[in-house]
Length: 125
Image 1 (cartoon, rainbow, N blue to C red):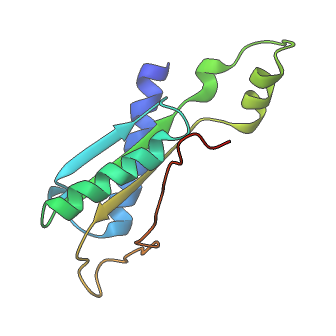
Image 2 (image 1 turned 90 degrees about the horizontal axis):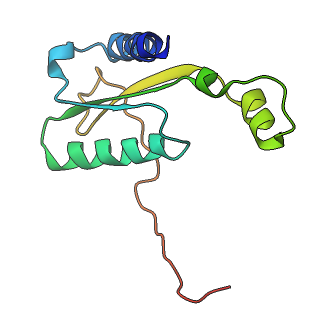
Image 3 (image 1 turned 90 degrees about the vertical axis):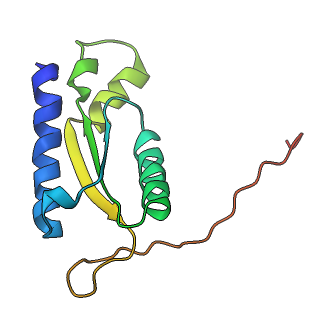
């Protein structure tokens, strides 16, 4: 079931994103597809898409995330973490097209904060 449904839901999300974008799918230069990779994977995919577009002029990256939590579903159990996961998460897919240098009046740019800082402090408690 999952072998069929994961790509199917990903395709549906991708087609909606392309339609909303309003450009030809032939303008997509890269594809990043993620599934069953954990909560952090979507953010990692967007970072990779950002890097691709910043380093390849004219690049447009289609990022597709498709998760099927059905695979983790099981019967009654005393495993509280498993029960909470089943209650909070479900099957779904999302997609977006990431690019740089948007076409004014055609593309709708999303501009998150472009600068940030992260640091690790050794031996901190």
